Image 1 (cartoon, rainbow, N blue to C red):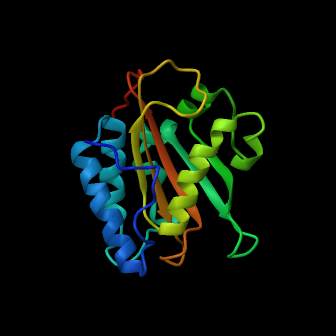
Image 2: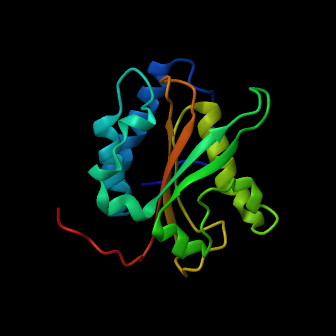
Image 3: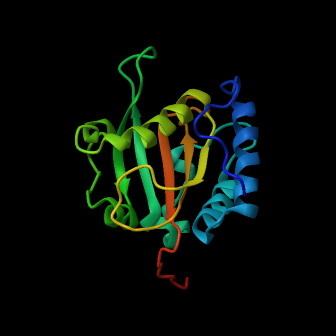
Length: 189
């Protein structure tokens, strides 16, 4: 699957909840079929199953109990806005063990922006999430890591999914990361 450009935002933000849903469902369908790792394919399938056709899913639509094998790879951030004119901040609510192992920092309970002095490359995942909030459309990537990580992998695959309590305005971003060559433990249900 060729990477969807992350250096340029989509042409325009989704204008309606229905348009946002259609664009996200199309991306999820593509990642489910062509994703590089089982982790992203499984996540895309799970998100497809719960994604409404007429709006963005809410946090309550996603039940982590339904995807236990994916939990170590997830990050959930809450979008904090002082005003609509200001850039959002991202408060990390959940950091999966795989991400904690990769960056050697537990992000939970802190804003991503607070790590910029320590980890300047954190600007990339922040920019991706800003694009998700602005456009109401998921951001997918398959590339060499742009942030400092402990693993020595050639590529990282990720997907940042918008969640919206009102179906349109993004209030959370659910992200999943998979490191190429990562040894993962699978569990039978």
